[in-house]
Every structure is written in structure tokens, then in C-alpha cells.
Image 1 (cartoon, helix red, strand yellow):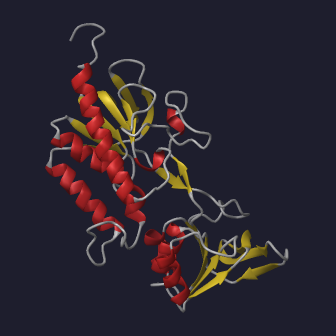
Image 2 (tube, helix red, strand yellow; image 1 turned 135 degrees about the vertical axis):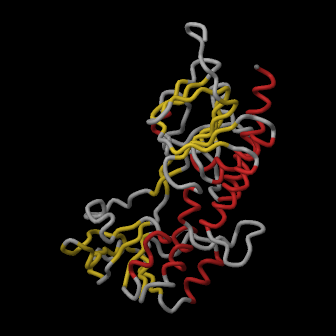
Image 3 (cartoon, one colour; image 1 turned 90 degrees about the horizontal axis):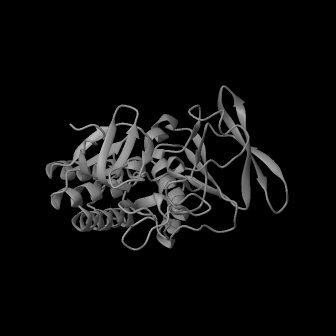
Length: 312
């Protein structure tokens, strides 16, 4: 290899192995692009931590996030998508050949799709961080069975919160939903199921104040926003579902983002940097669901293929 020459490894490198990343890998490899998906944790992203998936078209009865994630990965693998378990530390996208710097390896590619998704947002109450993993959880499918026959609380009121609430009731004795407003933001079909569930009690117009306990969670102090009254609800666990934060910090300064850190793209998933695309929950969009993430990935990979044809 000549001095200064860069060894080009891939046509397309996808950062993140959630629905957007796996869809991008599938479409990229079917277009005969040498494609690599880099994922540091579990394939499937947020989907892999979701219980039932009843709103994904074609979902069979009792379809779960983990089962759908595994099928997506196996399908991509069948089209020769390559996979790497590694953590992305940074990128250099200043040249025609992009460099992806990871803990284990340094990869080179013609195009990059950022599909790093989003992480659960902390609610910010006292004791939340200290009791994480000791009664405070952000993943129902990971941890609900630890609270079998116990009483737990859940913070939130959107689609994800209500979906996870229904899953949690399969295990617990009672579930208190703490919601800061007097009505839920989740879709009506989920609300109806929540209101019909005898294990669920909704605590309206209230916010979490503080975890009580010694080593493990023994209670949650909540405050009514209308009356300022505080009370302690006896629970052994607290699940938090109050939104997401985009996993985009390592791309700051390279890729244009909005004030919250969501990556800005056009309708073909192109960022401000030629040859760099974004897909899924990490980009600015109105609906963050498995179906829109998968669509983003397909569009991004198709656009990446067109970019390679036009520029290499």
C-alpha cells in the first residue's frame, strides 16, 4: 500500500443496530453495497426492550420487541450484512473517505448512516440516579419479573409509558402510574386498556419528588401539583418512561443538530455532510416508532447507494 493511502473497508457503515440500522443494512446489502453494522449493546435498540408490538404492520399475535429484533438481524445477515460489536468513539467525515473510530478497530467507508437512536431520559427526582439498578428501571422487559407480586410505580403518560405499564402488570401486584397532567398523551386504545386494568391506579397531576428506602427502593414520595400536598406511596420499584435523549453527542461539531441534539436531515436522510446520513430516533422527526425507523433506514441506504454511484 502506498504511503498515505487509506485502506477502504466498506461501501457503507451503519452506526447502530436498531430497526433503522438493521433496515439500512438489509437495503444496503441487497443493493450490493459492502455493508457493516456497528452496535455496542443489544441489536434491536429500544425495540429489543419492548414487550408486545401490536402496532407494527404484519406483527403476529404475541409479537415481542426481542423476537422482531432477532428476525430483523437474521434477515439482514442472510443478505451478507457484516456485524461488529464495538463502541464508536468518534468520526472523521472531512474527506471523501469517512473514518469511524471505535474502541477495537478503525473503519473506513464511502458512506455512513448514523442510526444510534435515543436513550431513556431521566425524570430528575431525588434518588433516581442513586437507586438505578436497585429498584429504579428504564426497561420493563428487562426488569419487570424482578418485581413479581410486588407494588411498583411508573412515571410517564405517553405511548411508551402506557405500553410498558400494561406489560408490567403481568408480573406485579399493583402498579401506580404517576402522571404530571390530568390526562394521558398516549393513544386512546392504550388508555382504554390501562383504565380497564384492575391492577393499575393512576395518580393524576403529580410528580415524583424522592425515593425513600435503605439500599433498595421502599417508597416514592410524590407531590400533587395543584394542592402541593406530598405523600409517600409504598412501592418496591419505580419505572421511568418520560421520553428520550438522542444518542448524538459524539457527532456534535461534525453534523448539524437542533437544540435538543437531534440530527437534521432532508427527506432522503442526508445530513449537512455529503456521504453522511441519519436514520431513526436520532434524527429530528415527528413520529418515533419501529415502522418509521425501518423506513428511515431503507431510505438512507438507498440514498447512500445513489451517492456512491454519483461520486465514486
